[in-house]
Length: 406
Image 1 (tube, rainbow, N blue to C red):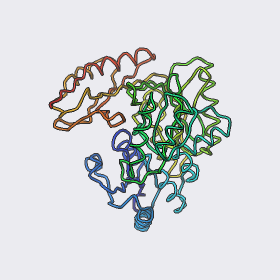
Image 2: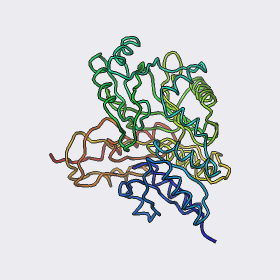
Image 3: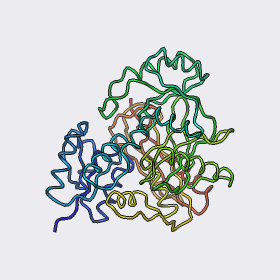
C-alpha cells in the first residue's frame, strides 16, 4: 500500500516552510511541494522532498496536478504555509473533498479593506481606514483621517509595502509607488488600490488561535519607523488580567465575525488607550517562528496540529509546559556583501539559548528593505520566567556580528 501524499502549494521561503514539510513526514505522509520555481526553496532539495514544477498562479494547473497525484496514490490533504496560496489550497481541498477552511472566509480576510469593513460592522475596534485607487484619493484619505497615517497594500504579507507616513508628500509618494505595482514579490497580480489607515498607538501583540480557540498571546517588538519590521517576539506575553481579558474578547469576536472557526489563525493588534485595535486577522499560522515559540514554551506544536487538521485528524491543543520563549532576529546594519559572521558560537553558549541561526551565506548581497526579508538570522531563548528569556535572547543577538563588504 502506498504512503499517502500531503501537498503543499508553494511555501514560506524562510521560517515555517521547512518545518511544515518535516511535520508531515514525521506523521507518516510524503510531503509534495508544488512550486513555480522550485529553486527558490533550498530546503526542498536538502530534505529530499518530492517537488512538482507547476504554474501556481494558475488554479486550474494546480488542481490538475493535485488530481494527478491523487490518481497515483492516496492524497491526505492540500495546504500551504504561504500567505499567498492559502486561499487556493482551501479551494482545491474543497474541490477534492478534503478537510480545510472556508475559501470565502479566507478571501474576505486576504483583502484587508474588506476585512476592516466586516470587523467595523461587527462593532470591533479597528484603526480608522480608507481605501484609495489613486494618489489623489490617498491624499484625501490621509487628510480626512489625520496625519500620521500608515499606507500599505490591501493583500500583502510580511510587512512588505507597509510604511508610516508623517506628511502628505510621503503618503502621496508611497501610495503612488504601491499603485504602480502590478505584481507582488511572488509574481501574482495585486489589487489596484491601497489602504490608508490611522496609526494605532500602543504595544503590539499577536494572538494565536486554533479552531476558534485562543492558544496564547505573543508580545511583538518592532524596528524603527517608517517601517514595521518585527524584530522580536516573546511568548507568552506578560499581561495583566484585564489586558489579557480585553485582548481575548476582541480576538474572539473577530474570529466569529470573519467566520474563522477552522484551523489556525494569527491576529495582530495594538493595545491602545481606548482598548484593542485589530490591525489584521490572518487565516493561517503565524510566520517568523512564533509557532516554534509556542511549542517550546507550552508544548503545543501548532505546525504538527495543522498537518493533523488538513489530513482529517483531531487537533491536540492541550498545554504540557509552562515556560517562556523569546526570539530576536538578526538584521543587517546596512547594504553590502556578507563577508563573514562572527559570534555565533558565543551566542549559542549563553545559558537559556535554544538555537541561534544565520540564513544568509557569505557572499550573499544583503540590504535593508523594511520588511521581513531584512531578517538574516535569529536566536531563541527558553527559560522558566519571562524576563530571563528576553534578556538571554538579546544578549545572544548582540554577540552576533555580520561583517559586510561594499
